[in-house]
Image (cartoon, rainbow, N blue to C red; front, side, top):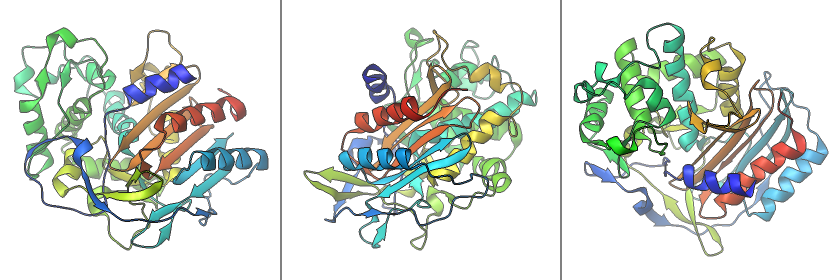
Length: 385
């Protein structure tokens, strides 16, 4: 597991995240390590889960799992919410620390967190819907949608999903936002294409930004509208919102960066341009239960057809990353995210009935430790089906 955690730390290290308030920003490449904006001291406080679980996720708290989850998170000075699902039931739920020092809010079970790169799995779900419908193929060249690549047929929808396209950027390309189309066209024009890296896995979010552009062109609808239809409306999610629709009255966690012993020393802020620039890759706030329900729908077949079997193949010896998940653990799919004060991780069984979801809002403590903890909980309490 230490090896897996180390791989995750590097592989998932592309920094993604969102904010609590907009700020002015110039069109440019954004290096996310430079986004610290404000310092505010606070204190951490454990809270009990305040919100009732969704009826579609029955609650059956198992004290040994609950106590283990809480104790191990406390030992890592964790701030956020974590849940364990076993056989389709919520068997453990712990919320610790502050959601917002400024707004005097403690983290709760229904608190929304920026899910960071976990969003890529949900974006992949929208792509798979088009594969199921025959409107796209894994072998469809992206040159059919982006003229710059019309003479490079080997760069396909499938290579974008696997992040083996050879395309990359430094940081996030964040032009002054006008529309999704303008953003995607800007990214397609400015992305670096390295033929020597084609077929080699490298984690870069631009693959999924380009996938969103393809989905929007095929459907004629915006990503936000498609996401709302597929997840929010269909599953009746109540704690899910796009970052740029956040309001101060909503129950969401602000992101912080730890300094010394102060978990809430530096609140993270981004601009509206940056929020939109994370198109399909890290611009959604969700509660832990909402995220579980959304990803569960990818596994069960109530959202996706048979194509999912081609993409969700955990434990394959030559498979590492596909469709938004790391897939090198037998029976389980994994994903991680971090940035702008948030760090997130999840492990989900292939049938969707078992999961560990950990959403945190303080960045800078042991991310590797939190990722490793998710694996330990899976091994100790859950079994692949």
